[in-house]
Amino acid sequence: MTEVLQTALTNAVEQTRTNIPAFAQHYPDDCTVRGRYAPRAPRGSFPAGANQGWTTGFVPGCQWLAYEVTGDDEFRVAASAHAADFARRVHDGEDLDTHDLGFLYTLACVAPWRLLGAEADRDAALAAADALMLRFLEPAGIIQAWGALTDPEQRGRTIIDSLMNLPLLTWATDVTGEVRYAAAAARHARRLAAHIVRPDGTTFHTYTWDAVTGEPVCGTTAQGAADDSCWARGQAWGIYGFSLAFDATGDPALLAAARSCAEYFLARLPADGVVFWDLVFSDGDDEPRDASAASIAACGLHELSRHETDPARAARYAAAGQRMTQDAVAYSPAAQGVDSDALQLHSVYSRPAGEGVDEGCLWGDYFYLEALVRHTRPDWRRYW
Ligand code: GLY
Figure 1: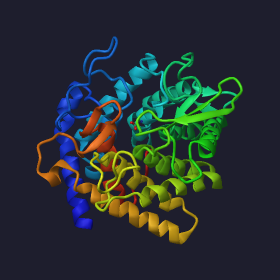
Figure 2: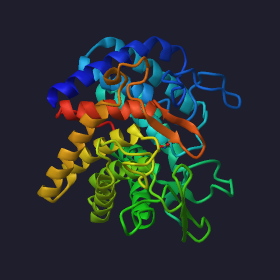
Figure 3: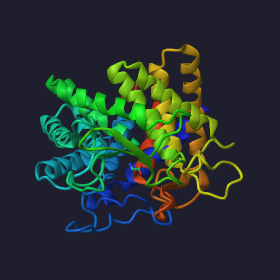
Figure 4: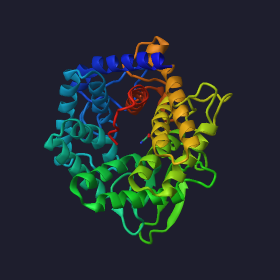
């Protein structure tokens, strides 16, 4: 087991090294096309390759992990250049109308702050946390996920992915001493535990609150198979995100939510351990896998095992996370002997939209590498 993971880690780090020059010229697109990343597609006033959208932070995220594994300065130099561009993005107010500021700035700026302690990275991450706080809606007590706060279609709507944006707020309280950031994160997480997790342990992808009264309205999907299905990556975000929220708050309701997400995810694993894109599907279904969901869940199970209060469950989650990381190795280009600049293949961005189906993706690369680091370097400290 250890040798398989060590070899996979070496291969993933070397691909991260190979990608440095191209990803310094332009940010890659969210997903590969036939296994290779093109420059990020132009959008609105942004030219091709610009630092926009929700996935560009995974590029420096991989580079910081590779820097920690190797100590090689070329990773630090490359990732620091990205951190400077993220500082420019937030200080210029570019493309900040999203809850995904947590994904972006935790990896691009909190990670280097934790590793190297540069004030510029701390200031950029705090500016991103302030921008994220503008999306916290009263009286609902949730952070709006998508779009402008005035957009009637998006007003009061959040998504399960948002849980991974909360650590930016928890970190902001840690460095400033101002409790309002962590308090908002805790309220948001509790609202999701109460409504986005269904009684049977499955989850909605998105959930909407009435922005005027703050009352819960309904759950729907955007990327899952149906409103009442269980989108695999959402369930994986739930395992990881509720585990982090429990660690931040000690609230047993958040541990219960993390357990629910984990139990259902594990109950729907196919024989080879890499889930289908929606958990309504399993062995025998002619549907694509989402290897990124497997890697996110493997990280989440590892994190959950560290905070789980029941030793038997903790051991089971730790073992499952390790097994799933090993299973995910089979979905890497190196293991499959195919030409690709992704670290992991066979993920799905959005099956309903026909985007990134059975391709590599930036978040899949990052969480695959994080899972390998977690399971080969027990002393690694998370960026989240
Ligand atoms: N956060 C968007 C996704 O998981 O597709």
